[in-house]
Image (cartoon, rainbow, N blue to C red; front, side):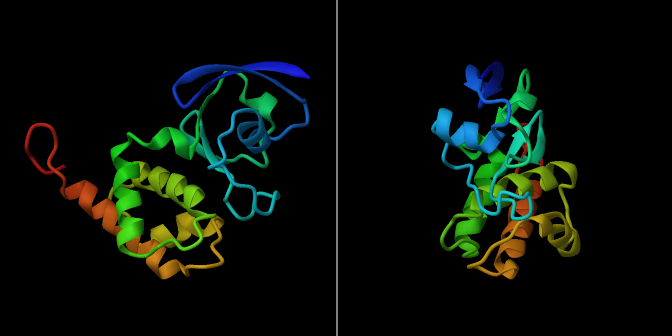
Length: 164
């Protein structure tokens, strides 16, 4: 076992982890953050997506010891984020989720896309989300939801009263 310390959803956390334990397993089993799902455990499906130092990464491919000293955000830590709120609302409106297993990974990946490109084309949304798999919904509704959220965020008034 090895002790690691990280900032997890804004809180400093110290964990004793196995050197071969994946970050997703540590988050689920040691921290109780079950929004990080395990699907394929090969980095293909995207269900285990979390943010590490601001970048979306596959929690099943990253060892927990690699997160020592990092800022880690899971879907549970994104509740107050306006981009995440817009995405969640759009996913519900566009029926872009069914069982919900893949949804946290899609939301975190889509939030990263919108941060990089506030006005993504449908083609760029499809390309950016291509590493996330859904077995229930179909991708049309997911692309629609990301497009809708991005548009709403662009049109939302800023704190000075003007559109962004």
